[in-house]
Image (cartoon, rainbow, N blue to C red; front, side, top):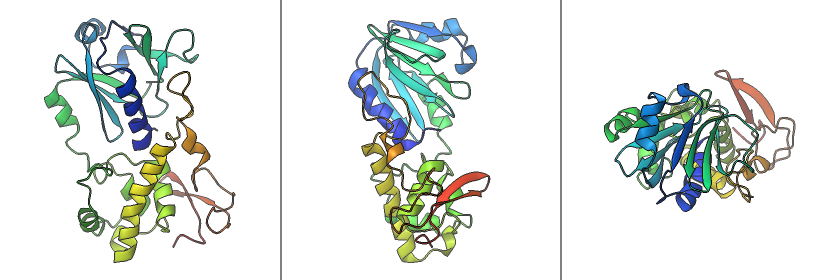
Length: 269
């Protein structure tokens, strides 16, 4: 499932390519991917201008000049692509939005969705989300106070969207590796130094994920050479049996709360 760096990568691309442009046509081929009857959805979106693209946690918000919003959650298997019918992926598209010569394809929305919401409905949807970890408001002091109250494993704490918004299975393992902490450690048992290391690891790993365009394995447009590069730069995730980049011990794959988890037993404590 796409996490914060993947969705932020999409956001930055769409800001450059689509903001300020008029939506000329909308095609919906799977009604369950939207929250309105098809004709009502199309009528509300078609002819409007995209004025901004924002991200909250693992969601994207396409803001329309009508004051309404398209809220996207890709969930597992969801992807997006900007291009034409000729160069688009040979995959089923649930929704297609036309910006003239550029088509924005929403692909694999079997579990994901694209909902038309008012600002009030949007705020209600986001009510239980935790802080944004790359926001200036996400401080060491606030994090330190919060993590000390967590009795669960770091892995499950980091992926808890009400604790921190946007981190999932992959980046939680990478963060624990960067902080030299086992994913099974408990937040309330960490020392002051370990809590600080974890906070800074969150910043470092999420920014590293952004630098490499996340791990999604499909380009967002035809000449996109960045998206998905993080897959080749993971420290531990999906690296079972490979040498640890820090100490050369074998990376271990385990399960923690039914989630696959990767770590180095030698240099993570």
